[in-house]
Length: 449
Figure (tube, rainbow, N blue to C red):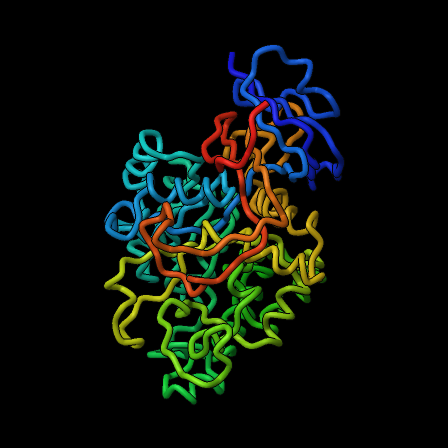
């Protein structure tokens, strides 16, 4: 029997509405007890002193790219899950845009075999909506469900054919699967490199208009309402799309949504200007190139408000690691994406420190929110995911909301060093992560009793 006792932390469990000083005791990979002094009752245990720190359930990421198989020079399941542990994430929902893509039972099972042998935290795969992610023929959803996928997505490419998307949504109702859509109309974003706005004009870059996202969100909501399917809007980024999701939910449509840390905190100005330099010098920062692109202040504000209200269910990283030669080239040729697992909490804490979001609300959108949105408890077969309730899986994170630390990409566990945050100081740090009762990340500053 293995026992871990986390002592004297401020335990915030949004699923239970708990917020107070307590100990967390995990036995054989499951939460055994939570309460004041509970750790003192355990004679033999590994111990973490969380005095002055926050203890929460492990974070759940509905959207990340682990790149394996097919792109192991960008990331592997081993390196990506090490990065997740450093970022406080104990459950990752991995996107299927691998090579081969996860459009068959054999492909999914090969990934799960690699997960069993090398993953440091839990990985739940998504399957493709269409064969080869080509947008023409539906992938075998029943076969994919049997293999263990938790949702379907062609992420990286929208399903642009309305007839195919309607079929996919209708078919998904037989299995109760969420359909996670990258909502950008390919025709409207053709050759676009960043948000269509004044910064793109200044840099002479073709834009990706907000309307590309909003038209596809509107179309897919209509199709989902007609079929009764579960539509999940991936990495929402515009005020118009947020308004569409809010209205659909008010009508009772089964629509959920996620937003990334970078779309909550950065704008399109990050492509051209660096913090502290003002507007004196222009840059073409490929590390700030992401799809959907970084938007404007009004869009950021709308996403933050919707997250606070619960209109947006979850924060998801869209962790997209790339090798140096994918980014250190001309802007038009550079791959889109940000390596975000290790900086997510520190970046999101800026919203808490500025008063835009409470810490319990932020933690809810990183834990219970994503679990509830996709019913991950029942899909994963685990039970008690995203909570520290007795009997739940023994996933926990120990946080220091006040610690400042520099972003040094060269020290990332991820193989992807692509981040526009390099050199910035973030306030708020993950100091220990526990997955299935095992300490998978721990800073030297975290004491043991």
